Length: 276
Image 1 (cartoon, rainbow, N blue to C red):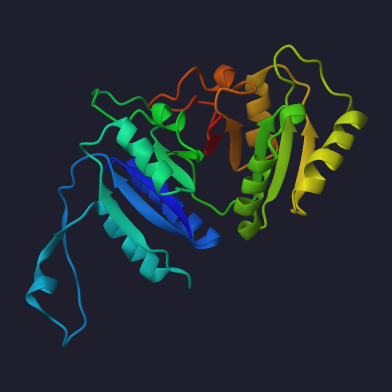
Image 2 (image 1 turned 90 degrees about the vertical axis):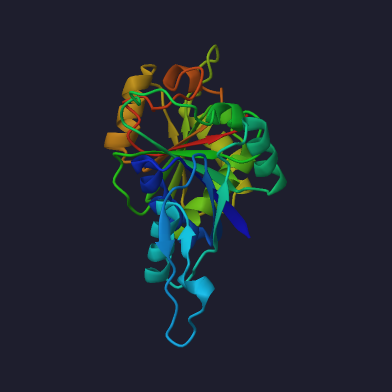
């Protein structure tokens, strides 16, 4: 069974990301682990059916507000009910998180991102340190992004170095939504553009034939201004998720050397980053 790991710091952006994670879990039939990076202070009272009341049932349970929200939504929506588990990571270092993610074969990590840099500096999980050493991708969800079903995903890569395993992963994510998946070719620094005919041949023979997904497409992007590229991919092509590989193919030009507490302002949709 796949497992989604939600990074929860009890913020509004964590709540927002958790709601989308639940929708994803129901689509791809995955369970959820809620990783609390700050101390839980919320108490809720568990409700039980009449005739089955015991002292334990009446006790207040110390859980996060996000867990309470997820369980409420889980009971209300859909036929598949993912298992939801809450874990306390408030005193753990990045190395312990990395070990946990790899040992438990986490399918995807999910983190909400605020739209402005937090005013007060506080100790938080260095998510880029974690991403550098885990085997699963990280989904960053801007808090201002409106929750919706996924219709289009775009994997930004140089087609000559396109990773088939990444495309297959994306196909398994896009499939339950019947979403369109495109390979957006941007030539790596120092390499020439690909002629359209040659690029289509490479896409057909090296990618499409090795990925069993009917809704897979190719875009040969020649624009060199990356701000324009991102704008077109989000606002003109209406992609719901952009996909990159950590430190590869213009990642640092678009995101920066490291993932910080906020995404660049031009990234207004979720960003899925695969480890390199």
